[in-house]
Image (cartoon, rainbow, N blue to C red; front, side):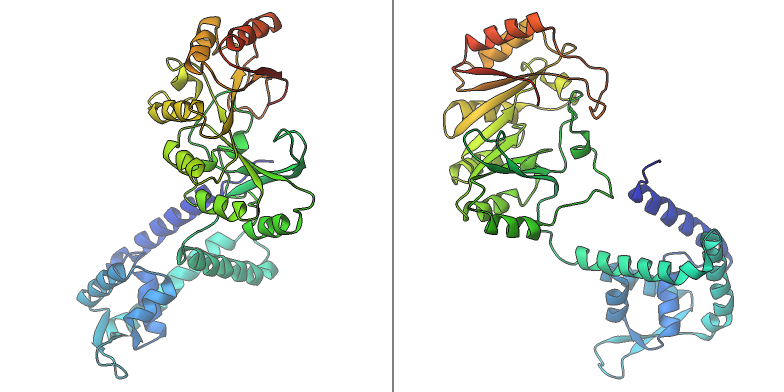
Length: 378
């Protein structure tokens, strides 16, 4: 079954509606954008401008311009409000009243086209749900978003943070397009993704302190979320150990989190040598300066850390691994993975390196860092 793209569906519906109405309203010198305002005034004679702004969730400047255009076309008149002389009340003219039967007929024809495939008995419920969605969207856009977008949650893990029982959260969204990434669903997000409510997470962490020692946050890229540091502060107040996995490209938020003591361990995915980095992340024009800063900052020992390297036959060579080892020389810990082809990879058909080459690469890295561990699942 084909997965619907809600954003595209809404875009098509909006553009098709606009084309239909603009064509039908041409003889009246009206546009689709003006129509809802004109109908609102006709059905609420004397309505104040501010009420139109509120009901339609309009920008005040946009509505003021629309009202002026309708007034210049002699479809409405503007008078001082009888209730508040400082406010403007809007009324339709005789010209409008003469065309409203036609306007309503145009609206009915469009809805008839749209709903011709639907069961008539289900239409009232459909209209109710559509109205509810509109009201919810108004509430969302009228307040600032303070949450972090979590798509998956492993409530308890014994392996994500060595030495601790942890709860693992996966954020949605990433600024890289690494071909070998097996977490495509956290990179290319869908309108229908089920976001885990922050309140549910807060409740779990509040009540499970006797069972969970630590919190692990992976992605996606957690630091790309504007309010991520605020969430870390909230979690840290509950005395959990916190480990964050990052691609290192958000250097300033990472540094700030470490300086504030909000994270106890950082796991950074190192993709390739500096020379080959942009190919490995699928971003040929990407500036890796922040990645380099993050590597240097971690190597300086400001926090406990590890580097994660996933080897891919198509991207890594002995030479590039040598360059990576020199880049992170003196590192405390490296986890080495061999890529396994996965249907959920961003690019399918990629391969891990041969076993013999894997251990050669491990030896190269081991000669430059304190500890290397080969892992068999990333």
